[in-house]
Length: 212
Image 1 (tube, rainbow, N blue to C red):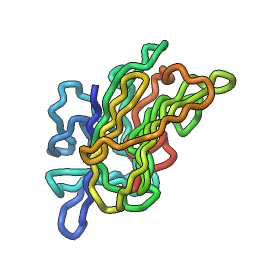
Image 2 (cartoon, rainbow, N blue to C red):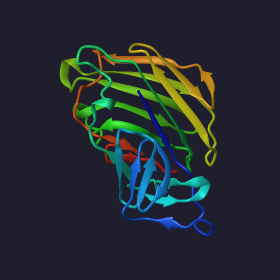
Image 3 (cartoon, rainbow, N blue to C red):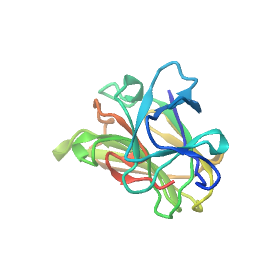
Image 4 (tube, helix red, strand yellow):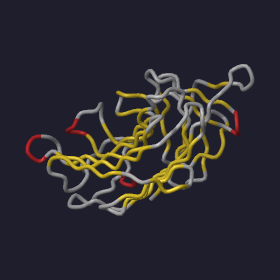
């Protein structure tokens, strides 16, 4: 499966904004009548929280303020990339544009950063692109695996990312180019947490938010 997520920045003096009654579809194409519409037949919609704004710039986009904005997608088995015994292959891709050097979480399956409730997270900053997978809850069996690539990403620049995971190894792409990365493992990692948690777009649970 693929998750395609995109952000576009806005210029308030040029593009009208809408801030209420919005829903975002994960295969989004356009905005109409208070709903972020898509071509997906899965009806996987995201609730926009704490003031995420929509702009019709570039055909439609969302802006996250870096304070508490996030989009919340209810649990779906389509985002469960483990069978409980081992990891399953998947690919995630999307567009992002950050407004500061620290960057942050693009997408995560998590709950407030609590190690007992994590599955995976993709992060970007001005110097890196990474994906982290989390195993089990905590204690003796807690562990994780991270694939991290060094990158030079200037704030205000549109970037496309794609991460393809085979179930054991990963390939990271930035703007269409394969980038070299390191793989780090800690604790006892066997597979991602199988959880019924939602997907957060632009945040790590309700912590660690994206500005862009």
